[in-house]
Picture 1 (cartoon, one colour):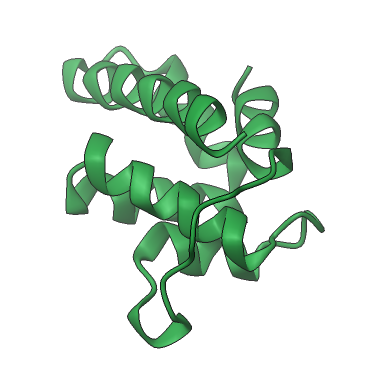
Picture 2 (cartoon, rainbow, N blue to C red):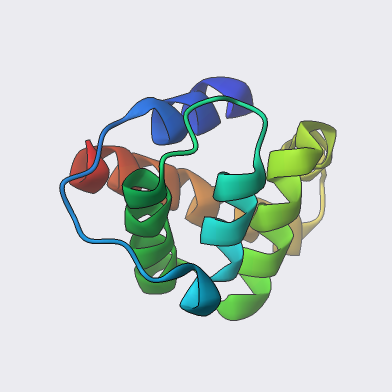
Length: 103
């Protein structure tokens, strides 16, 4: 499920302007450095803008780590912790919104 949502976010095309690299947010930097081949600057910038609307800075830092280690996302998704459950729900909303807005 996570890989599908992340792939959807990374494979959509963007029509929004990107933030310069020096000003790039946590999600944008993780997106640009990912090895998934679809880390286009404009797409990553768009995803960052959606992240700023949907996730707290702390959540963005957590989610950014998932680009390099998707297993961490699975641990959160499968966790019985209430805070992990809240994060996962917010992440799914973020992913859906990023696909809709950036795609």
